[in-house]
Amino acid sequence: MRIINEEGDNGVVTQDDAQQKSRKATNINVAGIWVEGNDNITAYKRRIIVYGRSDYNQEIQAHFGCYDPLAYPLFFPNGESGWHSKIPRHGVSINEVVDVDEIMEEDSEADLYQGIVDCVNAGEVQPSRVGQRVVLPASFIGGSRDMRRRFLDAMALVQDDGKPDIFLTMMCNPKWLEILKELLPEDLKDQLFQKNIIGTVIAYVYVIEFQKRDLLHAHFLLIMRAEDKMANPDHHDKIVCAETPDPAKYPEMHQFDVQHMMHAPCGHLRPSSPCMQGEPKRCRFRYPRQFNDKTSNAENSYPLYQMRDLRRDVNVRDVRYVSPPKAMWRIFSFALSQIHLYVTALQLHLPNKQMVRFREDDIMVDIVARERVSNALKRLFATILTYCEPEDVCKLWDEHYESLLKDYRRQCKSVDHVQNLVLTGIATFLQSMGKNIDDYALPKIYADANLQIGSFREVQDEYSILVEDEHLRARDALNLDQKYAYDEIMKHVDDDRPGVFFIDGPGGTGKTFLYKALLANIRFHGLIALATASSGVAANNMPGGRTTHSRFKILLSL
Ligand SMILES: Nc1ncnc2c1ncn2[C@@H]1O[C@H](COP(=O)(O)OP(=O)(O)OP(=O)(O)O)[C@@H](O)[C@H]1O
Image (cartoon, rainbow, N blue to C red; front, side):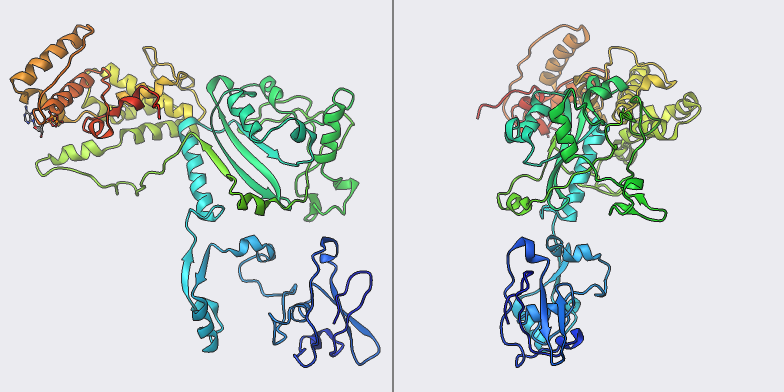
């Protein structure tokens, strides 16, 4: 047996001439080991020529089932059929079978090698009856659990900061002169997030993917700050260009665009193009697209970008580039995704299945009231406004006014203030859903509630701290020293006078008890009381407590 290549250097296998019979080669008949070439060009043109006893020869192509036992006799010692186009499919496409990367299945079986050998010797042929089930954890980068976790993290960003404004794809073709000349490693991120070339990005998430025969893609979802959101067609045109650049004005750009971004002709220009599918045949990428004279905002959809019929090009674009970077990416452990702001997954539970902590002497109705999540109602109200578009918003507000305000009224006596709190809460949720509370017939938010400023959310968070009855009642249980300090401090609060107080005493003499009484009563009057401490443990002892460094963003010199 010899290596056969396209130039016609034929090898010999002694066996019957028919393809079916070639499969029955035994060690007596096969006289050598087939060596696969590494040459990419001939890799897909392999074949074996069988010289039988009859006068004609039989060519066995690499995709024939009987090729594998002839090429890899050690793997198919009994001449079993290898891969062939009619191989039975069990719930997976052939692409999934062929892609070696995907062979690392999500939920697979595992056992010690010796265990498998023992099972095979015992006559077991079903892998599903051997070993134990292995579930790849979320820490397996690229696995479906990892992807799902990242998806949920990204959704957390959307919930917090609103819908992404820009979906930016960077296709990394290292041949691009811009990349060679202009972009240093990480430079794109620097331009986007530090130099703010398209506006200030308040949150983003990106992933690196390997598409189109391993072409590297970076997909960014960018959430812009309110002032930089693309609100009108002019703004869109400044950032997005869907046209092939003018060859007279931008010859270089035009050349790159034509060279790298053009989808091969299809449709009536070339009905045999591989992208033409279905009956009647249509390009599966929906090219050529409709021309548009001007960018316009479509109703509940993406904008229709300017793409004039300039008779310069067929408005189709696509890219293909062959490279093997995936392995290198993994070997060097380059990051495959990044998210900003940081998202931490909290423990999840089904509705009303959260653990509730209470003491033996707590009153049952208080426990239930304490645990009611008032935010859920505000979020639901905002969701109904956004997605159900109720006809009479005013009526909806009136009908649910009491329920929306109920939780806050327990802790604040000013009805106006409570209403304002609820409305601003709803406004915050509406904003995160891309809507503005001013567009709805709801009572106006008074005071200087400015949703655009970053500190607004923090003010809302402070207002949302629930005041516990126990802490409100603590005022009546203070001892003489505590009462003196309490009255002195509250006098300043009531008269709106500044003052600095230092409270000291041995451990366990009731300092924290006094703070809790002060915090609860100040908050009960609709004011803000910031509770901070130098350590996390001390901060946790107070309702709404934060460390001083975290609350005032004091830098830590490490
Ligand atoms: N006036 C009071 N009435 C009832 N219980 C009180 C009173 N003052 C303090 N206590 C109780 O005494 C215990 C110790 O009080 P607290 O934790 O406030 O002390 P502390 O001075 O903050 O202690 P440390 O300095 O160790 O943090 C707590 O269980 C608290 O509930």
